[in-house]
Length: 258
Ligand SMILES: Nc1ncnc2c1ncn2[C@@H]1O[C@H](COP(=O)(O)OP(=O)(O)OP(=O)(O)O)[C@@H](O)[C@H]1O
Ligand SMILES: [Mg+2]
Figure (cartoon, rainbow, N blue to C red):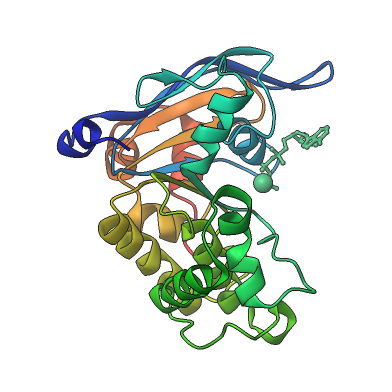
């Protein structure tokens, strides 16, 4: 991020315009338009299968949209060439739905990976950075552990440390609290807020957890599997008060705990 973006708290970090996402002929998302402000915690919510992970894969460049445009800080990501795309993706930190930690690698090796792939830093410096990142997520001293030796919550933290390795401008989390008990889930939520503040990053969280949405989301969009589009967009508390769409009310007013 350049200094100008840093100074402007109202900058738009992500702009998505009329996105259409498909797997071969199957349309998963259509007409997706939204923007995320710099330093915002922005949730992408919706029922299972509505296309949250698909949207995230497009946002981070793992998939290319059939139609539409994605821009970061005013720069077009969709039409960037290979070198530019590498620059963009260097500024992203991603925590995948299944953590995607390498099971036969220690946490040192797992968290080092982005540094090995994207920097020329020496092994010593990488080791220092990994120690710092692990400390940042509450896993100080866990460098030599393997993912299988960690609880689910600790694995999420380790994956978060890896996502933080390159000091990203934008963090993407896919279901960071899924499968965790409520207390551990809340700790992860706190960690996300803490990271937003300390790193100064913009955060996109894919989740259908109401508890997380109402605790930490600044704004959200709600995706709908039937229309394949966005059926609500705004601050969660406002949506509860003002949305007249029964699907939105049903989603946001269901029992807490999932
Ligand atoms: N690689 C793929 N090839 C073809 N279809 C896919 C692929 N990945 C996902 N889909 C389909 O796209 C739709 C959206 O899936 P996606 O994984 O994005 O949903 P989701 O909202 O993340 O669901 P969940 O909450 O269960 O993680 C589903 O119908 C799914 O079957
Ligand atoms: Mg998913």
